Length: 373
Image (cartoon, rainbow, N blue to C red; front, side, top):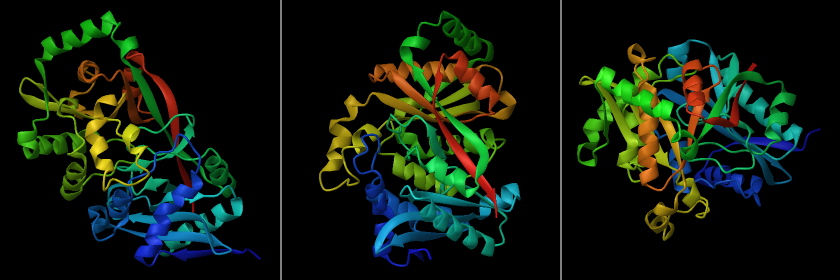
């Protein structure tokens, strides 16, 4: 008989145990970036996170001999169900010691909860949705994750496969290096031609008009990404909340808008890789660590392209190449010469082809798993 017990998170103390368990899994791992505890508490708070206005979740802890050995969340996302009508629920925030019995007990608990909600498929990991940390790292374990990207031990793959999960979709992270791209005369000339042909103008975020520019980004986001597999539209409140969280970290010159003859046709959100600073904080922003966000900002060496989208009717005109070129130049002015474009669906031919032409390389892969329940 198994000595593993599964229980739900019931108290604030339980939630802290749920959050802090990651420190056990990644003890001594030089690549893991500890999440900010205050950010995790807010993300998991069903009363404060606007995601839960149209979603529900249960958090589970696995214990053996009185010690926590794993955790998982089961998530029912009503917006996803309305949008895709596919009877799919999600698991997320999965962490486990390297023990199949523990992993199975956690997956069973999530599966049972989702079954009771009338769902027939379980997909993940989603923390808690495709608009947050998404996917399980499959390649690239010898490098720290860029900002807002997940990281996990290599053995997680075996725990999922042995349980019966199958691949639903792979996601790519592309590495972009200034040195490789800036030498491309073809790309330089090409993006100049596109600008002239379509009267394309690139502008950046203006902090004094933050709300107005945020509305422009909302417009592009829910139009440009709507056709993507697994896409879930963000509510106004969710985007506002995300913007409030990211605003102190945003570099205005890396939040770009593309207009063709006065019409908004695309946008890009690029973040400096603050994970290079968060790594030193061990999950604590206060009382003194927040100062590092300002004193060490100039030492950041990477940036991440979180989103770069062109409205569907304006795709295949080369606007994306112009945005990439612009990002490259602007990042260089900040002393940043390496970037990650992530994540990109494995079958998003337009994005992958464009990045390949940019002389980028796939340097990390993530997997979304799925199983019938």
